[in-house]
Amino acid sequence: MNNIPKMRATIKSKLAEIIPEWKGQVYDLPPLDLILPGSCAVVTFAEEVQKSSWAGYRRIVKVWPYARVSNGGFEQVEAWTQQLIEALHDVRLEDKDGHAFTCIYLGASDSDRIDTLSGLATRAIRFGIYVPEPVDTTISNNALLTSSVADASPSATLESGQPDSWLTALHDWTQEQLGNEWTIYKEAWPAGYVAPAVLWRLTASNFAAAGTSAFDVRKQWIGHVYGRNAQEKQRIATGLVERLSSQTRIPLDLADRRYLTVSEASVDLQADAFLNGQIRLTLLRRVQRELPNAPLIREVTNKPVLDY
Image (cartoon, rainbow, N blue to C red; front, side, top):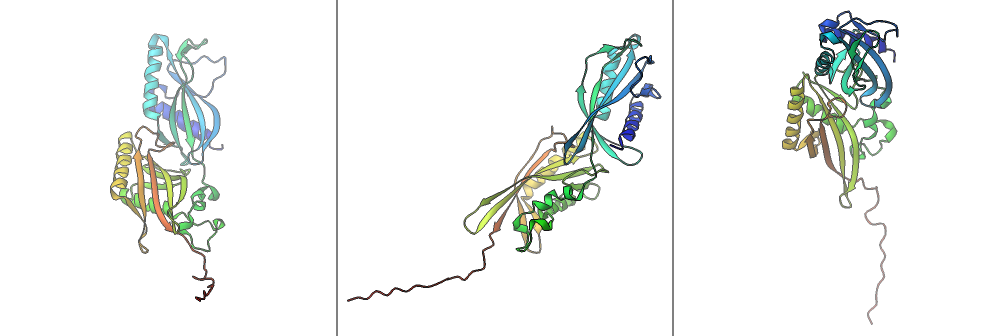
């Protein structure tokens, strides 16, 4: 990816900000014969994979804190590791050009070891760097093609790309609840996403007959509440679910008096806000079937019976 060097510089700068002792001492992968000074860190980039359509791609970054054995050794490495986790886990970073990415702590990848040349204690810790990609028109319109026949005109086709009115209604309702301070996204995190924000994405649709003249449409959504801190994430996620459960209906088209019914809403406060989302929501709407244009009575047959 063409913005990897900017990510590298941003991470190195952030590490020096978190651990002041590392100022000017955060390195890329050094030559094998280089003797590292005490109190420093090395940053290495590992594999890169496409993670998901809504979170973008993931790049593994390893951070190696180095400490002199005489200055605490592995105890110092452990203390620095804890500082890095608290300062970087589930945190949004931004480079000088405005490209945003999120750090997720993934654990330690190797055991403790002593560097043979410098005699410094170290252990690698891993972070996943998640970078949303620019949303392509066809990708961003995933929800457009799932717009149910319930909301389309009789002449509409799948190829026409009708916007999903359910997603628009959910977006507008959420914006009304949280105000303009929050940004509400649809389907995927954009490349320049900001916080605080909420992302709604569709995960499944279900259609079931409700008699001969109607059918029920159910759509399942996941909501990502990305606040500025853990307390805000929990408070807003819980508050949205409480309001969804108490309000029970979301306006779909006020002019035609059409609404979406909240069938089920739940929140998992342990879920990752950026990757997995904390809110599970099922919306329901009963739709009348479109009957074909045909005469009410096609023909009448009369068979008289003579009574002798």
